[in-house]
Length: 250
Ligand code: ADP
Ligand code: MG
Image (cartoon, rainbow, N blue to C red; front, side, top):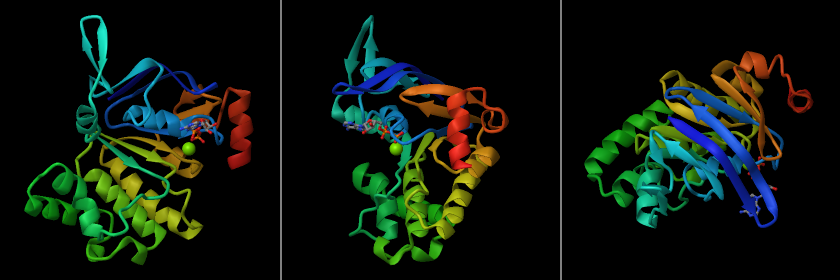
Protein backbone atom coordinates (compact mmCIF):
# COMPACT_ATOMS: atom_id res chain seq x y z
CA UNK A 1 0.00 0.00 0.00
CA UNK A 2 2.84 2.38 0.84
CA UNK A 3 6.33 2.29 -0.66
CA UNK A 4 8.92 4.77 0.55
CA UNK A 5 12.29 4.65 -1.19
CA UNK A 6 15.49 6.54 -0.37
CA UNK A 7 13.62 9.57 0.88
CA UNK A 8 15.70 12.55 1.91
CA UNK A 9 14.34 15.83 3.23
CA UNK A 10 16.15 18.90 4.54
CA UNK A 11 15.00 22.16 6.05
CA UNK A 12 17.78 24.55 5.12
CA UNK A 13 21.00 23.02 6.40
CA UNK A 14 19.18 20.51 8.63
CA UNK A 15 18.78 17.06 7.06
CA UNK A 16 15.67 15.72 8.77
CA UNK A 17 15.15 12.54 6.70
CA UNK A 18 18.39 10.84 5.71
CA UNK A 19 17.41 8.01 3.42
CA UNK A 20 14.15 6.40 4.52
CA UNK A 21 13.03 3.07 3.07
CA UNK A 22 9.77 1.62 4.29
CA UNK A 23 7.02 -0.62 2.95
CA UNK A 24 3.56 -0.98 4.46
CA UNK A 25 1.30 -3.78 3.28
CA UNK A 26 -2.44 -3.28 2.85
CA UNK A 27 -4.34 -3.92 6.07
CA UNK A 28 -1.26 -3.64 8.25
CA UNK A 29 -0.54 -1.31 11.14
CA UNK A 30 2.90 0.27 11.36
CA UNK A 31 3.82 2.06 14.57
CA UNK A 32 6.64 4.60 14.36
CA UNK A 33 8.60 5.32 17.53
CA UNK A 34 11.52 7.61 18.13
CA UNK A 35 12.76 10.57 20.11
CA UNK A 36 11.48 14.08 19.58
CA UNK A 37 13.08 15.65 16.51
CA UNK A 38 13.92 12.32 14.86
CA UNK A 39 11.78 13.14 11.80
CA UNK A 40 8.59 11.17 12.51
CA UNK A 41 6.14 13.99 11.73
CA UNK A 42 8.11 15.02 8.67
CA UNK A 43 7.97 11.45 7.38
CA UNK A 44 4.18 11.32 7.81
CA UNK A 45 3.84 14.71 6.15
CA UNK A 46 5.83 13.61 3.10
CA UNK A 47 3.42 10.69 2.61
CA UNK A 48 0.61 13.03 1.65
CA UNK A 49 2.85 15.69 0.13
CA UNK A 50 2.40 18.24 2.91
CA UNK A 51 6.19 18.25 2.60
CA UNK A 52 7.97 17.64 -0.69
CA UNK A 53 10.83 15.18 -0.65
CA UNK A 54 14.26 16.32 -1.88
CA UNK A 55 15.29 12.89 -3.09
CA UNK A 56 13.63 9.50 -3.43
CA UNK A 57 9.96 8.76 -3.93
CA UNK A 58 6.81 7.61 -2.21
CA UNK A 59 3.88 5.73 -3.67
CA UNK A 60 0.50 5.00 -2.13
CA UNK A 61 -1.56 2.19 -3.61
CA UNK A 62 0.62 2.17 -6.71
CA UNK A 63 0.35 5.93 -7.33
CA UNK A 64 3.37 8.19 -7.04
CA UNK A 65 2.74 10.88 -4.43
CA UNK A 66 2.93 14.45 -5.72
CA UNK A 67 4.38 13.61 -9.13
CA UNK A 68 3.45 12.14 -12.47
CA UNK A 69 5.92 10.11 -14.47
CA UNK A 70 6.16 10.64 -18.20
CA UNK A 71 8.87 8.61 -19.87
CA UNK A 72 11.98 9.27 -17.81
CA UNK A 73 10.75 12.57 -16.45
CA UNK A 74 8.85 13.43 -13.30
CA UNK A 75 6.37 16.29 -13.30
CA UNK A 76 5.10 17.76 -10.10
CA UNK A 77 1.32 17.62 -9.78
CA UNK A 78 -0.68 20.83 -9.64
CA UNK A 79 -2.23 21.83 -6.34
CA UNK A 80 -5.67 20.56 -7.39
CA UNK A 81 -4.25 17.18 -8.33
CA UNK A 82 -2.35 17.01 -5.04
CA UNK A 83 -5.56 17.78 -3.16
CA UNK A 84 -7.39 15.04 -5.03
CA UNK A 85 -4.58 12.58 -4.25
CA UNK A 86 -4.77 13.54 -0.58
CA UNK A 87 -8.42 12.51 -0.38
CA UNK A 88 -7.17 8.89 -0.37
CA UNK A 89 -5.17 9.52 2.80
CA UNK A 90 -6.68 10.41 6.17
CA UNK A 91 -4.54 12.39 8.60
CA UNK A 92 -5.18 12.69 12.34
CA UNK A 93 -3.10 15.29 14.16
CA UNK A 94 -2.00 15.62 17.75
CA UNK A 95 -4.17 18.72 18.31
CA UNK A 96 -7.37 17.45 16.61
CA UNK A 97 -7.53 20.46 14.22
CA UNK A 98 -11.33 20.53 14.18
CA UNK A 99 -13.07 23.59 12.77
CA UNK A 100 -14.16 25.39 15.97
CA UNK A 101 -17.07 27.24 14.33
CA UNK A 102 -18.62 24.05 12.89
CA UNK A 103 -20.64 21.41 14.73
CA UNK A 104 -19.38 17.86 15.01
CA UNK A 105 -21.60 16.81 12.10
CA UNK A 106 -20.47 19.74 9.93
CA UNK A 107 -16.83 18.91 10.72
CA UNK A 108 -17.32 15.33 9.53
CA UNK A 109 -19.19 16.21 6.32
CA UNK A 110 -16.99 19.20 5.46
CA UNK A 111 -14.59 17.34 3.20
CA UNK A 112 -17.03 15.09 1.32
CA UNK A 113 -19.86 17.63 1.00
CA UNK A 114 -18.40 21.16 1.18
CA UNK A 115 -15.04 20.41 -0.44
CA UNK A 116 -15.85 17.56 -2.86
CA UNK A 117 -19.46 18.40 -3.55
CA UNK A 118 -21.02 15.05 -2.69
CA UNK A 119 -24.75 15.13 -1.94
CA UNK A 120 -25.39 16.45 1.56
CA UNK A 121 -27.97 13.73 2.29
CA UNK A 122 -25.37 11.01 1.65
CA UNK A 123 -22.74 12.88 3.66
CA UNK A 124 -25.05 13.22 6.65
CA UNK A 125 -26.02 9.54 6.54
CA UNK A 126 -22.38 8.45 6.32
CA UNK A 127 -21.37 10.86 9.10
CA UNK A 128 -24.05 9.41 11.39
CA UNK A 129 -22.56 5.94 10.93
CA UNK A 130 -19.03 7.20 11.49
CA UNK A 131 -20.00 9.08 14.65
CA UNK A 132 -21.70 5.94 15.96
CA UNK A 133 -18.54 4.00 15.19
CA UNK A 134 -16.44 6.35 17.35
CA UNK A 135 -19.10 6.38 20.09
CA UNK A 136 -20.37 9.92 19.51
CA UNK A 137 -23.76 9.43 17.85
CA UNK A 138 -25.32 11.79 20.42
CA UNK A 139 -22.82 14.64 19.81
CA UNK A 140 -23.60 15.50 16.18
CA UNK A 141 -24.96 18.95 17.08
CA UNK A 142 -22.26 19.88 19.60
CA UNK A 143 -19.40 22.28 18.96
CA UNK A 144 -15.79 21.14 19.50
CA UNK A 145 -15.30 23.32 22.58
CA UNK A 146 -18.22 21.54 24.27
CA UNK A 147 -16.37 18.22 24.02
CA UNK A 148 -13.51 16.66 25.97
CA UNK A 149 -10.16 16.25 24.23
CA UNK A 150 -10.81 12.55 23.80
CA UNK A 151 -14.19 13.21 22.21
CA UNK A 152 -12.67 15.86 19.91
CA UNK A 153 -10.01 13.44 18.79
CA UNK A 154 -12.67 10.80 18.07
CA UNK A 155 -14.50 13.37 15.92
CA UNK A 156 -11.21 14.02 14.12
CA UNK A 157 -10.94 10.29 13.43
CA UNK A 158 -14.52 10.18 12.10
CA UNK A 159 -13.69 13.16 9.89
CA UNK A 160 -10.57 11.43 8.57
CA UNK A 161 -12.70 8.38 7.73
CA UNK A 162 -15.35 10.37 5.89
CA UNK A 163 -13.53 10.15 2.56
CA UNK A 164 -13.04 6.38 2.96
CA UNK A 165 -9.27 6.69 2.79
CA UNK A 166 -7.04 3.82 1.71
CA UNK A 167 -4.53 4.86 4.31
CA UNK A 168 -4.76 6.55 7.70
CA UNK A 169 -1.88 8.49 9.23
CA UNK A 170 -1.87 9.34 12.94
CA UNK A 171 0.65 11.79 14.38
CA UNK A 172 0.79 11.30 18.16
CA UNK A 173 -3.01 11.14 18.37
CA UNK A 174 -3.08 10.88 22.17
CA UNK A 175 -0.15 13.12 23.14
CA UNK A 176 -2.32 16.18 23.83
CA UNK A 177 -4.83 14.26 25.97
CA UNK A 178 -5.20 13.99 29.70
CA UNK A 179 -4.12 10.48 30.73
CA UNK A 180 -7.63 9.29 31.56
CA UNK A 181 -8.79 10.12 27.99
CA UNK A 182 -6.03 8.26 26.14
CA UNK A 183 -7.73 4.85 26.36
CA UNK A 184 -10.97 5.85 24.62
CA UNK A 185 -9.03 7.17 21.61
CA UNK A 186 -6.69 4.18 21.44
CA UNK A 187 -9.76 1.89 21.59
CA UNK A 188 -11.19 3.57 18.47
CA UNK A 189 -7.86 3.22 16.65
CA UNK A 190 -7.61 -0.43 17.70
CA UNK A 191 -11.11 -1.05 16.39
CA UNK A 192 -10.09 0.39 13.01
CA UNK A 193 -6.92 -1.68 13.02
CA UNK A 194 -8.85 -4.87 13.65
CA UNK A 195 -11.22 -3.85 10.85
CA UNK A 196 -8.32 -3.99 8.40
CA UNK A 197 -7.60 -0.29 7.85
CA UNK A 198 -4.03 0.33 6.69
CA UNK A 199 -2.41 2.78 9.06
CA UNK A 200 0.82 4.37 10.14
CA UNK A 201 0.73 5.56 13.73
CA UNK A 202 3.36 7.74 15.37
CA UNK A 203 2.94 7.25 19.10
CA UNK A 204 4.79 6.75 22.35
CA UNK A 205 2.13 4.30 23.57
CA UNK A 206 4.21 1.15 23.76
CA UNK A 207 1.33 -1.00 25.04
CA UNK A 208 -0.70 0.00 21.99
CA UNK A 209 2.23 -0.81 19.71
CA UNK A 210 2.66 -4.22 21.30
CA UNK A 211 -1.02 -5.06 20.94
CA UNK A 212 -1.86 -3.61 17.53
CA UNK A 213 1.26 -3.15 15.40
CA UNK A 214 2.25 -5.58 12.69
CA UNK A 215 5.52 -3.69 12.36
CA UNK A 216 7.29 -1.35 14.75
CA UNK A 217 9.73 1.14 13.25
CA UNK A 218 12.26 2.93 15.44
CA UNK A 219 13.58 6.21 14.01
CA UNK A 220 16.47 8.29 15.23
CA UNK A 221 18.16 11.30 13.61
CA UNK A 222 16.32 10.93 10.32
CA UNK A 223 16.99 7.24 9.82
CA UNK A 224 15.15 4.01 10.48
CA UNK A 225 17.43 2.36 13.01
CA UNK A 226 15.45 -0.83 13.45
CA UNK A 227 12.16 -2.32 12.30
CA UNK A 228 10.29 -5.57 12.73
CA UNK A 229 7.46 -7.27 14.60
CA UNK A 230 6.75 -5.75 18.04
CA UNK A 231 8.01 -8.87 19.79
CA UNK A 232 11.43 -8.27 18.23
CA UNK A 233 11.79 -4.49 18.28
CA UNK A 234 10.13 -3.89 21.66
CA UNK A 235 11.27 -6.94 23.58
CA UNK A 236 14.56 -7.85 21.91
CA UNK A 237 15.90 -4.71 20.27
CA UNK A 238 19.19 -5.27 18.52
CA UNK A 239 20.36 -1.68 18.29
CA UNK A 240 21.72 0.17 21.28
CA UNK A 241 19.81 3.37 20.37
CA UNK A 242 16.51 1.46 20.36
CA UNK A 243 17.30 -0.01 23.78
CA UNK A 244 18.21 3.38 25.20
CA UNK A 245 14.96 4.91 23.89
CA UNK A 246 12.76 2.08 25.15
CA UNK A 247 14.34 2.17 28.58
CA UNK A 248 13.18 5.80 28.81
CA UNK A 249 9.59 5.36 27.61
CA UNK A 250 8.72 1.98 29.17
P1 ADP B 1 9.49 14.44 15.34
O1 ADP B 1 8.08 14.40 14.83
O2 ADP B 1 10.16 13.11 15.33
O3 ADP B 1 9.59 15.09 16.68
P2 ADP B 1 9.87 16.36 13.21
O4 ADP B 1 9.71 15.64 11.93
O5 ADP B 1 8.74 17.19 13.69
O6 ADP B 1 10.34 15.34 14.35
O7 ADP B 1 11.12 17.33 13.13
C1 ADP B 1 12.42 16.89 12.79
C2 ADP B 1 13.34 18.07 12.76
O8 ADP B 1 12.96 18.92 11.68
C3 ADP B 1 13.28 18.94 14.02
O9 ADP B 1 14.59 19.39 14.29
C4 ADP B 1 12.39 20.08 13.61
O10 ADP B 1 12.70 21.24 14.33
C5 ADP B 1 12.71 20.24 12.14
N1 ADP B 1 11.59 20.77 11.34
C6 ADP B 1 10.38 20.18 11.19
N2 ADP B 1 9.61 20.91 10.36
C7 ADP B 1 10.34 21.99 9.99
C8 ADP B 1 10.09 23.13 9.15
N3 ADP B 1 8.93 23.27 8.51
N4 ADP B 1 11.07 24.03 9.03
C9 ADP B 1 12.27 23.87 9.65
N5 ADP B 1 12.56 22.82 10.45
C10 ADP B 1 11.62 21.90 10.63
MG1 MG C 1 6.28 14.92 15.68
